[in-house]
Image (cartoon, rainbow, N blue to C red):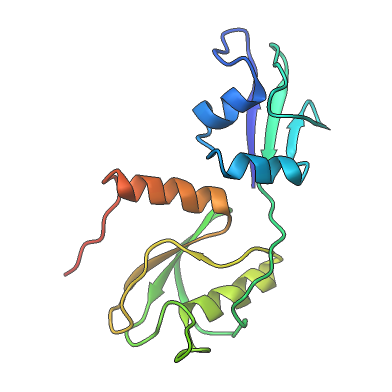
Length: 166
């Protein structure tokens, strides 16, 4: 996933860092991780967050991650309600644990999501945004990268997203 910002004459930002923090709301913890991976580009070239920008520039934050998937991938018949480049919404059935644990090393939503990630070539850990109890069925969101997980978690904390039980 890439975040792209074309700089125009009316741009209110002065540096790449300004765009990261104020436009895309990339966290102060995450920006150095993106930088370390050389995934901040200014006009197609790796750059530093403090680099000044000018009209006509294009700033790209490449959020491609290369992390080890800790959960053992297991093929499962999971119902996907929604999926795009950033997020997957699963309809978690009742009696399925969400996360692996000492008592549940397999048969979890995380195991099924890991298999899906591997089949799609996604190399990042499983980032479950909202946990549901094992006995509860419902929508469970899984982010495909850290940025999406952070942004949706911020929206939940701000009360923009919430769980509803019926």
